[in-house]
Image 1 (cartoon, helix red, strand yellow):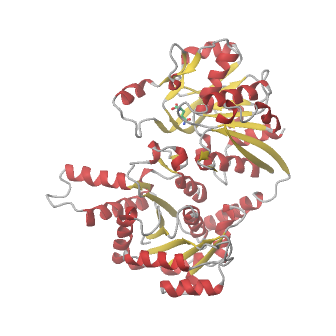
Image 2 (cartoon, protein in one colour):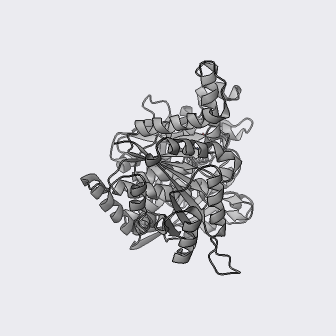
Image 3 (cartoon, protein in one colour):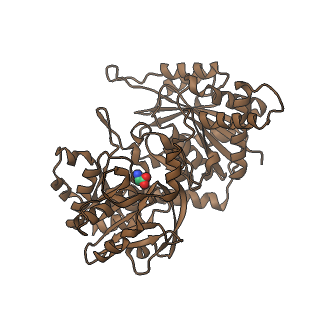
Length: 546
Ligand code: GLN
């Protein structure tokens, strides 16, 4: 079949759920029998999302091949249940880098290399390459930002060029926002009409418009938008706030989005076994997300929650989703509370607030902020036998806390904290030293999927039910193997190692010391999917419930 492409662009403002809408669109096209993949375009100049502060940008989602990408890539992997590769992600920076590298190797045969058409052509090349590599019949391409911004104009140009070449194979969906100002109490369609104009100015005409709003869009407003865009009112899809993001695919089907999209792309619904099964499994998953008999309260103690006067959980999306899936699959509602570790340091919060939680999770992070608070919380979970899951930085701090307070190594520290005369409990990985010295900080951590070998008889081995696992990583520091003996003598077990036996990957406390205390150097949340909840999160939620 000829490959089809759907560009998804945003109107009016960002943050209205364009990525989730695009992922849900992908899901219903899968249910219509097609193999679907996704490409995310971020218009910033950074080559990838790895060098950005999580408070500013949200979570960095690491792909299996180690590419550091935007959190929307996590949505695509989770909704489409598909492992994406680095070709599925691009930025202005990465595209310019490709063009410049090609020019430097005489790849343009002596021609003048111009912003147009060469930059959009490089975008198109990458989109087509991805669709081929992923064997996708339909590829969804989400262009970050909103129409009218200077930054994404070259990506819209790529959409325009592709559509001009093959009008039947390319559709453009505008995800726009319809405010309901409280002073008026009425849904306003004008900003969306203006977004349509802006899009048209760049030569791109929408085939479908998804109207995000707090409430459903009524007929008169659908008609106004249809008139402004020269579309049929059936092409205007209402997307009100729903209870859960996982309800969106079904809602889109009810709105007829699948049939409209297929019609635009000159495709017919296919009925194959795989599509039926995938639809059935999704239905079961959504059902399980609605009715849990039991409940647990989990505290996530992190350091990237506060932005100005607002508290955001964006930096930990995958952790949050992974906890939800673990709950759904075991009939347990997981109530999550995010707490800034810094609040324990400045005494805004007393450690005893942790008493009310059934489980404590300390996720990953970088730098010095909130470190003492994290250590205090880990110590509290350890002493009070509250089920504990540490991830990446959470594991490193669990080792330091144990060394300081149980093994009597008062000066044990992580080199990342840069404290003079400390014992290097957590050290920089050897291959990282020269990278840092050369200032090579982007894309140089230990990244992506690596195997680990689990220790027989350990909690980790029991949880995973297998000897060898593969998990995604993102770190520069590691637990110093020289301290393994002293940790183990005191009851901490190193239950997972890299296959060469050099890098400790999992630590846990002997069950005589603690019923459930486990921490991992990798990021298990990145591989947790709606239909295949992650064993480590399952075990943590279960232990918290017991
Ligand atoms: N900052 C730590 C390191 O670089 C932990 C990283 C993380 O939590 N992702 O090793």
